[in-house]
Image (cartoon, rainbow, N blue to C red):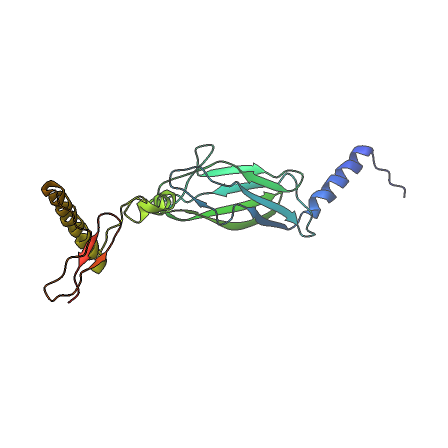
Length: 215
């Protein structure tokens, strides 16, 4: 018996065979996994997945649904809802480009389900909302984070402080002596003997000078 099929019947058979080949789906997150976002901001990177069949070939026309948590850290998609559906392109990829985060810090669990005909596959992706204090600390200048401006004056402490103060006091006394000598019309370039007959030794710290006698 001879059996003949029309062109329409052949196309129907081929379409049925092509559909039957997609028996198993595989879904993989290829971008956006582990992204850290600022509170109340838009997602820093798009969330993208790739859908393939059991042979690893990209599946075009698969419906991929993305689901955000109903409470806790999360937000909404660009459509204002917690669920969005994207159809895969010729490379088997689906991208969510807009995700508006709420202000609750923590981990966001995003459920992803791909389906075509009778085949289905699912996975979970995680993103994060950072602490507001951590964002502020990271963006603050180094001096402000240490509690003091970079140009804060240095304060002398310990023995060096008293040496400087003594030098200033001695310089003021020496300047007064010079002025007194000029007013009396006398000036002496020779060193003044001490109480024990020893000669005083002059120590110059810039101008004016400081004189300290030997013991």
